[in-house]
Length: 380
Image (cartoon, rainbow, N blue to C red; front, side, top):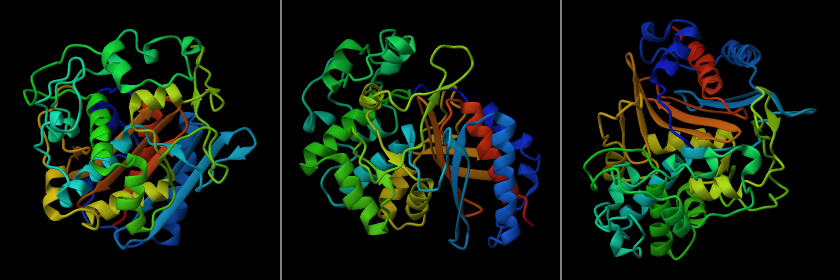
């Protein structure tokens, strides 16, 4: 959940993956040949072994629309990762939430420039003049709960109340703080904005955000590989890749699958699980113009810049913008206990990559992503 600067790490990863990132002309990859699929799998297996990652799942949508899926490693001892396994999206789900809000804008049910006071009651340290747009691009000034010293994420793992479901009211009062700046006067990544956006969506639709995402965004695309309403016990038809986290600081990760995720799900506000194929298909459809109106997609890709200490070229509505040499990437990264997930669309190449690991390491996630990017871009 906590954001970390990562431009240097990602650049280093891409160069370590083969050193060819900046030299490849755009549009060189035309189709997926069998030997390319074999090379992608070999790179994935090699990177998994080199980094000590527990398991990885990846989906790549090529320029011709063909999908390659690859997996490596384990969910837990005796159970290998399979393509149908779901991983926690973490903050990658912000892209879906922003898409849902913009779909409601397209239907005339709300406006990005509506003040949140139009839909929500007052909360401590929340300015009612904040707009919906400012919630989605992190210019609201709202305090970041995970920076509060009493936030469970900042306590020893064995002292966390795993079963506790934090309400939004509790988070603004117990874990709240003064705004960083007046609405629109700066940029600071915060979970709070997307909590409030979710509440506005549910107020407007008289439904739940998960139900509306499935109905409005995913069903029309025939995407059914996401678990958007994470309840316990997990429905039997879903297979979840077990999360691994170093609970005692000895450098050895433990399987934390049996621990309730109520605490982290409620604090993050977006607790969606997905297969990588479903995640890649979502982002590809979005950037192919098959989800939102052109006007709404343009709003999503209206990037705030520069961002302080984030390593991003800009942040739109639930969308991160990377520029790496001549290559532009649009999507979002997710970081949550036991998982790292990311999905990005490479604009010039018309390639979409979704990747998740069940290890608690940004560095391992970057390395796995780099292992896939290098052979994709190296094809002449």
